[in-house]
Length: 214
Image (cartoon, rainbow, N blue to C red; front, side):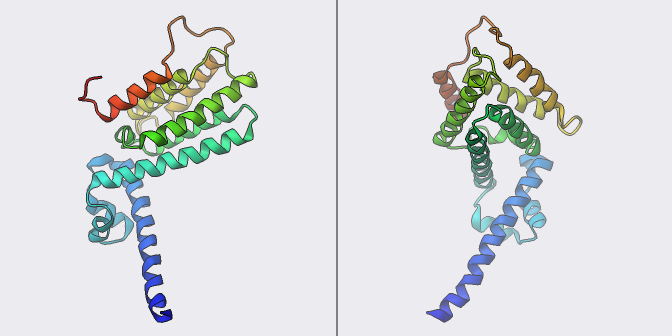
């Protein structure tokens, strides 16, 4: 048994190391070339054979799905750390983190939409709602701003990142600061109704199944 363990443990470590190399390479390659990048290019960038990639991911869609889950988990961790500070600054800091993440993955950020589990998206949304409540309790965000307003800002950030691309990669930062300035106003920013939580859920469903009528 001891001899068997000695033989198998290095293989498990190698497999874990190769998986990490593939994920890091895939995120870099897709950010640079988008989802048209080949699995062969990802394997080359990772320094492994393409068969190693296919053993873990039967196709590119499976690889993108795992990347989407990994990115969402990272954002959940960031949101939890922000909310734990409980000083009212967490929402602004987290929105900047979202902007950085979108910019880092600008080559395929649009493809990540709809690839994350609905339960995980709702978990992140709950954290954002908590960050918004903290910011309002500390007077850093106006009382009329809703979760729907914050999520619309996130969508807008993604659009700015996709449009500005590599030409002005930091354009999202000014866009965010302008909107945060509006969020801080104590006066109602608009007489029009905000997007509701129920509508956010319906939007998520439509994003995952765009050809299904509601």
